[in-house]
Length: 514
Ligand SMILES: CC1=C(/C=C/C(C)=C/C=C/C(C)=C/C=C/C=C(C)/C=C/C=C(C)/C=C/C2=C(C)CCCC2(C)C)C(C)(C)CCC1
Ligand SMILES: [Fe+2]
Image (cartoon, rainbow, N blue to C red; front, side):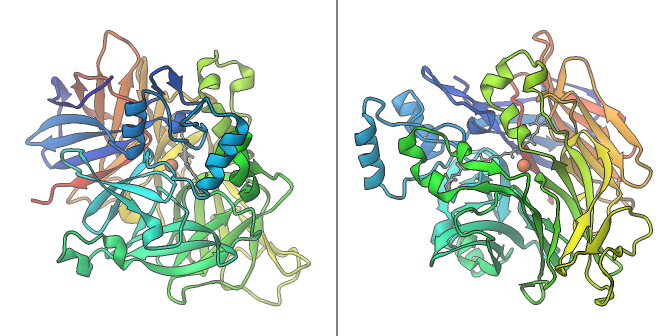
């Protein structure tokens, strides 16, 4: 078993920029078996936090498991006793189906997992490890200790919430969640947690106490809300994509005693539309027009911005949900043969939604008036607007931008390059205007999501560096933190870590402003 690791990097090759001060804090699945039992899916693994702290040109590494209730219960039982999205767990495996059903019915609303393995969210001055259930776990960003267990349901009626919030210019956090069956309605809720609140004076109060619902959008179908993993935000609008990738509430409610995992209650409907909801933050209402496109799956929004009366939003899109299938451990263990590869590549996709257009325009006339894009939007015979995207490139995932450009027109995107396998081998910088791609790769190196840190005196969008934790699959070499010049994508330095580094998912950089 792995314990806390804390140490100074054993050696630094190249250099660590003097101005780089702060902590890179990341989250991801770090343990996929407990005792004799294993999870079914890579996204189910127990959260392992790790951090790289930059101080006086040196790098300090730290790693700790999130001591969630899920982690503690599993460790105590020496097996998996709490269900995750891809693994249904039975605390008492000896029970027959009837007693399982009884246990289930006597806990009509079972306690969901607090194994928050996806990302780190900042609410007010607090940092939380997050997943997509109603629980988040406050953490100490310095020691990586696990603190309070926070239930969104105490403050808002959200049963699920994303791990990819947005932060506005004032530092407020905006996130989106799904409220299932509250007052007979299933709806998507956009909520805002102010950066500075009355809770600042009372450190014991959660910043979520001041959470405010900006807008609620009813789901198209009461019993089958869509799954979403992130959303987009411009200066004035929030973009929610209602995917035809849907949760079936009736199936979810019976999954436990049917002996299937929750993931089997999600399905992709290739014959349905993908709806775009554009919410005006000023009026707190969605714009009246109905915008849609063909069926697609999206986990990560890249960025969104306003241009000449249009909302432009960039996402990583797929033709189906095969990415989730690819990450089942049985598929990962299998030799990566043709059948286990994703059947649909991640594509950098741009949609353009016209907000101001000639309302008398004929059916079939392109309403997009931005000359630099091939994305279109046309009225159909029902008066709804059908959008067709522009594809900018293929094979990129885990996208990051210079976050100072979030909501504004960006040019550069940093991402993992995906070659039809779940193993990352390359990170890239993509220029959305010239379509030029710069890349970094090295033998037996698996780079994590590349994160951009701006230079404090930077003038241009790409003035800064890229940080990525590299897992080295060569047992003779150690894993390291990679630093690239964001402009040239050339290596500035690497700091080797004398410990096992896990392949993580997402994280944030916390600048040290002192
Ligand atoms: C509360 C509730 C519940 C539960 C839930 C849960 C439990 C959830 C979880 C969830 C989760 C937990 C999710 C996750 C997700 C994730 C994702 C979506 C991710 C993505 C990723 C990616 C995309 C990646 C990629 C990559 C890598 C990593 C490496 C290599 C390469 C690549 C780039 C491919 C239910 C439904 C039952 C009911 C209702 C209520
Ligand atoms: Fe994500």
